[in-house]
Length: 626
Image (cartoon, rainbow, N blue to C red; front, side, top):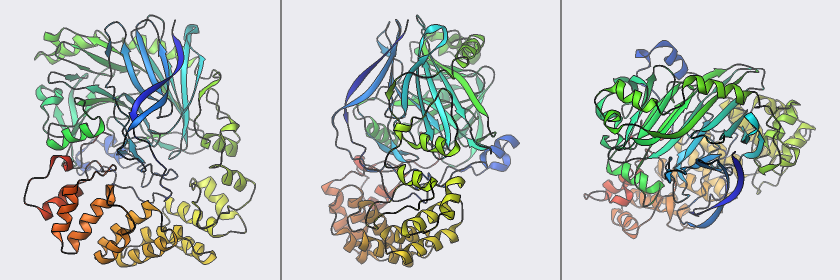
């Protein structure tokens, strides 16, 4: 019999800090693109062009974290039987943090000894390790560092199920994760369900990303003879699965390999002794991927940045489509579900690492649940997927309760309780009653909801003030009406001067000089807002006005990204020596982006010497931890 218990995980952890109140009108980095679409199969090409997100609205960015870690207690839930112990973090996207094989004492997933956010997710903050559940769009989910609801629910055969659920806001989709560990089982089962409660189709994306330890002898296997390689060139190329490709430690650079799975889908990573983790699923979760950081200086630096002092890791992943660059169409009113399994693998090492690829696959597959067993357990789980959960073990956000109230609908099995509604939802509850939003211009505006239902309410509400026009502009922008958005923000300024509308107009401005001017006005009204100051300095550098950039930097300490901007500003002012002093004093940019080259670019402009290791994050765009 399995049990569910509450506990706390004690880790050195960096705080997430406050969310960025500036709406993310643009993606920090463009979504990955493919340069050879015309060469690809028709269904793959069609999926590549469908459903891409230009922003993560209505979500806000999570970029307020640092690099200072203190011992913290993270809420955790433990599901275990006689053989396995699964530790789940409901406050961090339901991450499966650990999967301990109690018989061997081995953790089957890569267990990060710290919680250290870094800029790899759609909302910025992301952390390495365990198994992450990604719903939304290409990249790490907006919920990777956000809370989910959790409760025990009746499971198959009387065994308890640990259920987690939330509302994914970029797609407006509710989803659930049911963790199920039958008594005596050496497999953890995870039932996943995504529901579309709307009267229109919705682009859908799902990838379950598993981090496992990488050793010199680790081999990754999946039932495929070929894989789509996505790398530095931006191309998708079909390559043979053989030899060095399956040994991540032999990779020179970061890369994605999307396997062309033939037969029941699974993937596994085994060490030189044939031991490791296997992941399998029912047929709907068809895609399988290997991600490697590569053995370049930048790849090693990234791994140490994410998990200080640890050995390297790789990721084996499973998704709805064949690649992570695709979105599928979830029909109106439809629900998709599947069952995944995670458990230990023990294969004959000589066969698993031998040259006979079919024999190697067979040796590993023998330790995985057979397809008919997974289908049987999937049917058993589906029979209880609507069962009402018990008392909450963890609380999520109020957004699901708000949306279900607006739609006047209920979702069996995943209730969004009224008591989860809070201050963030209050303005929108009032809008449902026809009351326009109100706030002081110096106060931080509430989140803006941008789906078409809320947009219609915003446009129709009478007695519109500066805040209503501000929200209307963001909603119009999200819908692709850039001219209408700018007009709304100008109306916001007419109603009452405010830095929030000036900032949005700056982002919308194509002329760098005018954008810088708008930023100056915004900073004048919101002088203590660090994210705004960072954007304003960068805008003045882009406009060729380093003197104004230096003036904007004066109130801020030369730390983090402000230090990098200071070095850039000094360089632009003709003071490479001063820029070099910034580097020599030392600084870290907690939110350095994967693929960002700014640290190296500035260094090479001020020094002929090699880039110091602590600043070497050089990872060409293309491969990614998505």
